[in-house]
Length: 145
Length: 145
DNA sequence: CCTCTTTTGAAAATGATTATCATCATACAT
DNA sequence: ATGTATGATGATAATCATTTTCAAAAGAGG
Image 1 (tube, rainbow over the protein chains, first blue to last red):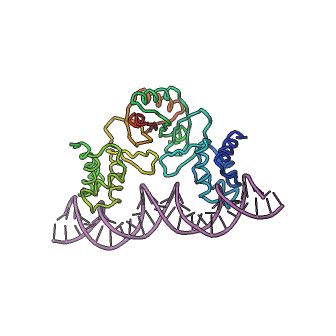
Image 2 (tube, each protein chain N blue to C red; image 1 turned 45 degrees about the vertical axis):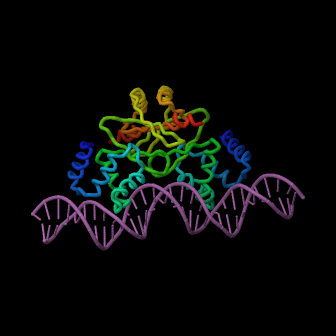
Image 3 (cartoon, rainbow over the protein chains, first blue to last red; image 1 turned 90 degrees about the vertical axis):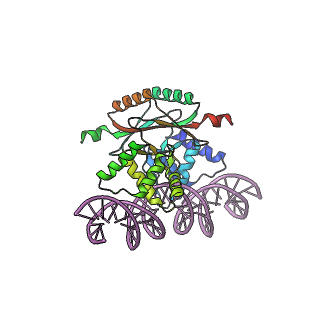
């Protein structure tokens, strides 16, 4: 599974004259089988559990390659760490972040996207990407109050 | 001018049993007379130009106080630095960020806010804050292409 | 003024990320 | 297969923004 992304990565690697390595494949597998918003550290630990010799630097380097080849996107939620999420072709989604338990709920809303583009047009901006995050308390945490 | 914010800060300081100091007033003035999205470093340099003895740590500490007392809000634009923007009571705004020249255009759009709240309700989230940023090329940079 | 705290500034510490570099592994020609 | 050139790796040092530490300095209140 996830053949499409694997192919996409390998094509990218080949096209750039880079090399296909054991480590890159391990990180790729770890990434593709992880949930959508893993931090670099979490991914590093996951990779380590399978192969304790892989270094932090390699994980960082490889994640950057994922972002470059279009199978991942770097995101920030205000804690000091960077995370990478999967890119599913054509789809964009935004986030509801629980400030209590850290849970992340994704959503898509075309109406919002449309309004955003209207606003950008108004100011003459050519928008390439955007980011919408709402921070609050998730349903589970609200029940526990 | 900016009396309201000065009072708000001084009341906060007093209420917490903290002390009013020369340094805090200098940083406050620098902040209140600066444009809306100054990075901590930029503010530090501005403060330094008036009073070269003030340290970096003091600027950091004071900006945190501004955020606590409600006259500033910490924001991040993905470059490694944190910025603080002024809070004008009741008003919320989002950002268009030019990825070429770094220009920041603010905007408000009630329709978007309304839709956001609808989405949050749908998922049972109680939203406290949100953040909407669009990244792209501003009109000026587009002309220069 | 005195005294009790809080603040300050300089420097060290921290945490995340990036660069360095000698060694290793891959791709490709032989 | 084997050699070889080049890119990749991992350990470690370096970097960058931010935070902490701590002795000395400065407010607030008596």
